[in-house]
Image (cartoon, rainbow, N blue to C red; front, top):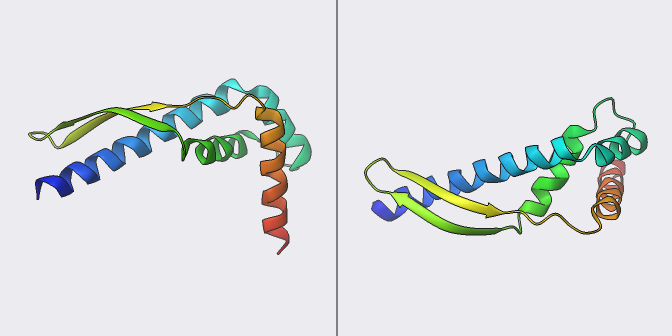
Length: 103
């Protein structure tokens, strides 16, 4: 039905918006990339920063949902507010990954 198509399309749009915002965050935050490379002992810290951003974006605000019923496309705005203490939060995030890996 119509509602299902809308739900699927808009969920996909949110996923795409989150992925794009996370990618941009990982691209802009070289400081976090360096922290990842130093503390997690990886060659490229960007994927870890991306994963961190995605975890933050799970609680991002979604607004301005627009669904086009003819094309079954959905547009949304994902509001990503960078955390004030991004470095501390990221370090805690890396620690939690380490403890998960140790199990």
